Amino acid sequence: MKQSYIRIGGSIVIGILFVVSAMYLAEQSEKSGVDSVAVAVTTGKSLRTFIPVTDSVYSGVPDWQAALVRTEPLVVTYEPTTQEFVSDGTLSERFGLDFFKSTIRSKYYGPFGSDVETIMERLIDEALVDIEPDFYSVRDLQINPDTSRSAIRDYGNQLAQIILRYPLEGNPETVVLHDTVVRNDEQKLRELEPILLAYRGLANDIIQTPVPRTYVQEHLNMANTYFALAHSVEAMKLSFEDPLASFIRLKTYDEDVRAMLKSLADIYQKLIDEDRIQFGEEDTFTKLMSTIIR
Image: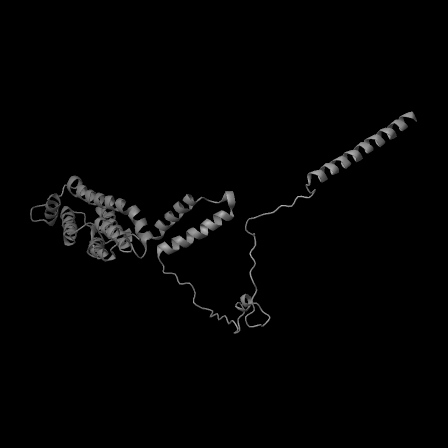
């Protein structure tokens, strides 16, 4: 009971002290002449600018709003087209479409999809197969069962005569293509035409020449190498129309050239070293060899 009185008495004393302190502070404030409420005054520019609303024609609609109102109806005409997408049939276009679809599909598969490099390699391999020419086969040959030395000698002269018939003069095809790209001159591609005709003529005439039975493989290789080179030059002519076809064929061009040189070397080796065919000065084969040596 005594502790309760002590708590009550302490609370009364603390309350009296608060009241006395407040009265003292109020008295000091009146003496100093300072208001208890401070007013903040800014001298800077207003954050908002008043825009007067005018109605010059007294229509009840502000001028700025009237300027946005159209008096005539807005008519939108739409002419549907029935024209469908027409492909130009180039390898470049097909490659681009396949690359786009493959990339979208790969992103859909998330972490299980292929990366861009893998997609590019796959599409280039497919393009190589797509533009691969239909090479000659044994069925296209005229096989001569006569394998006598005189028949083989005649065969060597016939091949030499075909090669001399189509001299490859002027700049090589790779030089023509390089100058065309560097100068951005499509007209220079015309210089490829005689080269293309020469390769086509070589392939066509060789495949139509009767071949001794023992020379079938070497003969077929030679015809196909010239046919492949003709195909490469034909692709080079499309450098502006179908650049991807030219690029991909260039990947195999060096290999085609080496194969052509090897086919000539194989024929020579078999004629001279294996069958030991003797060619005289009057033979076309000898004239071809002298031309090559010069």
